Image (tube, rainbow, N blue to C red; front, side, top):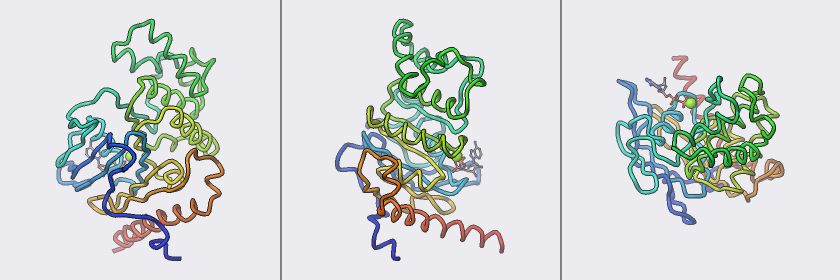
Length: 276
Ligand SMILES: Nc1ncnc2c1ncn2[C@@H]1O[C@H](COP(=O)(O)OP(=O)(O)O)[C@@H](O)[C@H]1O
Ligand SMILES: [Mg+2]
């Protein structure tokens, strides 16, 4: 089958017509010493848009998120959030990490409250707001538990509640479900979609799962090459709200196969290079 013919794909990155770009990445490059990780990355993320990023391990996905959240300075180009260039961490931007990133000595309540305390939110308001977000992610009753008392899935629910509690307008997710088992992962994917549907934000969702990228994203950005760059941006024209049923749609399979083929060409080339 000729996937190119059946998939709406574009190497130029279109600005979303439905909403203004909340995040605008322009000509971004990053070097660590002599290692050029990525080059000339362009990407727009709309106000209520989920952009999934896939790419081989080491292509710079985490580094790209770090440039967006202001913790890693780019070597070239720039990132704008809400029209202002990012030069340091920006309020309203939250990150969810692969390894949950919880404080082991803090309870669920205090982990979720952390960002609010940092932002100087009054104690009374914290007491009011935190339980709402704990409930939203399905952790009601676990307010006083410590991370070690929770399963991986519950720890990531806590990580998600902590990110959501600051009511971010930009949510950055770095392979958030990579460390949990397959069933939990599926549950959390649909939970996240449900929550996003209730409070749509601008979301960048990094994953190495092609299926997850197509399920979550309005668009999928494929990074590839050495140095990496945006090889292709695929519009995922599957209806929202997405559900388990989405996974059974023929269109889902077509899009998944398209992304798979794009990435596998790269993996094969990398393997051949190793053999030489
Ligand atoms: N702080 C750093 N110093 C030097 N090299 C780094 C640093 N962070 C990441 N790298 C390198 O940059 C490349 C991209 O890393 P990363 O962004 O973690 O990729 P990915 O998330 O796609 O797996 C890798 O080769 C990694 O070793
Ligand atoms: Mg990474």
